[in-house]
Amino acid sequence: MARLYHVPLSPFCRKVRLTLAEKKIEVELIEERYWENAPDFLRRNPAGKVPVLRYDGKTMAESQAICEYLDERHPTPPLMPRDPDARYEVRRLCAWFDDKFHHEVTRNLVYERVNKKIMGQGYPDSKNIKTGATMIKFHLDYMVWLLEQRRWLAGGDMTLADFTAAAHLSCLDYISDVDWRRSATLHEWYAKIKSRPAFRTLLADQVPGFPPPPHYADLDF
Image (cartoon, rainbow, N blue to C red; front, side):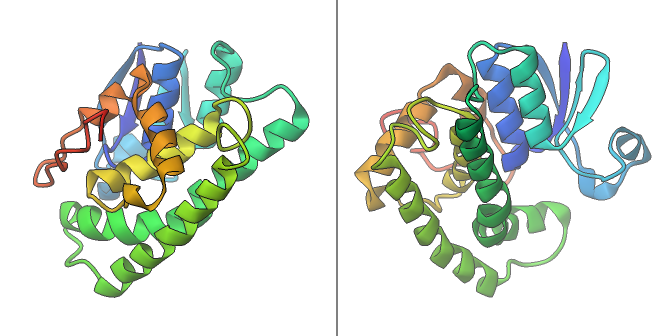
């Protein structure tokens, strides 16, 4: 069985969890307090970051590399297109969410509201929260622009780009920081992703001290 060292509200861990579930790969989830820099964990990943996946005799880190490895090893259902141009677009959007969106939104909202308390790093910074609440509108509008031209974010088929975006948005939805009334197009896209069997374990997550809102696990939200 695969073993994933993760934290529940990490979008990078959630991306790997979605990919594993979509590929129907059974996995044991182990919550890792990576910020404590435990020697055993640092031996698994000297970078001191989650996710870390133990699979097929290998110990792997970095969510994008893990997901592409799993897609190549288990090509059905595909999450990366075969066409080079389409593959580029998927990777571009994965990088957009894991870099720009994470820096401007996820880190400023999820990490300030939740991670700081869990890690014992003090109180949320209201300036960062305000920045995240402002920047998410720009990113949601960009997603809407993409979805008005395509069936899915990167093209006609669901790809790793959709899982990457959904991983970030699901963390934000857990703390009620996504205004789904902003766009019916975006709401419909997320409802399709949220209804997939691969999403079920994410919807069952419970972070002690931070209960999710009632709509979080509701497929008819």
